[in-house]
Length: 455
Image 1: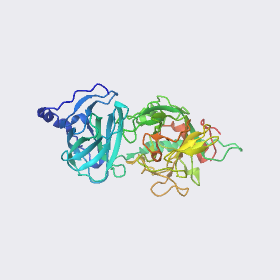
Image 2: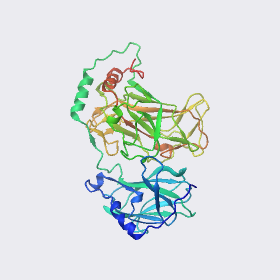
Image 3: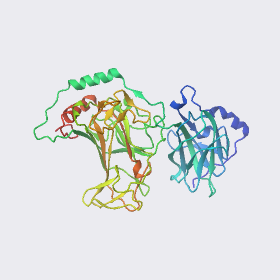
């Protein structure tokens, strides 16, 4: 155990001084449009708590070495309107065990809002973010208690912050409307580009690609948790080297370099980190394909600058036995030779790689760069056409992810947990001409192109 900070019971007078700092209700935005972040050290009152600086950059303070029976009180926490409430906690633990953090309203024994089991994270400063959903809760500003429960005794958890916000499906915020003048200019430039005729021996498949390598890892997600470093589970980032919680379209286009080719693709791509026996397994390569699944690809247009979307569901925790749609598979000589003990992961021959293919939506509403759930502005084509509320055909993106590992009966774990939770994010920042020419030559013309955009 790390040297522990002495645990103290703060005096009532100090507790009163902290009340103002603990009032965290959003004052200017509707509750449904806000995510309220509560720093753990901003308690209005507490029992058994001490604070210390976090070891990571930007983490601020944390409440440290909490044990069974310890509690923190936070006043004026705006839980918003009725409906599903997403609650997250950034925690660290060197011990784990049977402990849990219970969030209750009104008092230390009041109604249970949600509960976060605490497992060992690797140390008192090894931070992870846990997320839960409260399906029923009091509305508006509430007094929230964080109560520590543990049957094994001793210090078991440090807490950095909590966040409270509407779940993605009900969140009224998050619609990012496109600048129509910029889009019209981008479309006009695209339509003015010449078409380079494909040779007679061209493979007639609508396709070009970006060939990507691993760039870096962070517990960040600039789409789901913008401006909140450390708020996410660990992600493996591909492409733009600058990607972090504060990424914007402008920061991507500033050109910090990329782990993808061509160099004209400055986009950010990311997936949850894969672990085997607790050690990260990074992809040996990811090919990001841009193609078309439409009956008539000639209507396809490029993505507007700053477009973002998500495929998959990090919250989906379900068994994935052989034959399940959208699962990990083995590619290469020998292929799959077995399954993990829980049946959810393939075991590959030593000569084969673990693989996953993730397909993104390809019909767009033509108005929004993003939506509250990062999916509602797009949809998949199921009949080879785009129409209705999503009439605009955009390139069909898919990640083909390769891991140079075979696995074993012990299986793997994603940062988002089960194999079913595999998901991916794209935040696009191509050079307009480079993408436009590829869409025109390769997708619209239905000709297979390489990474350089050549036949």
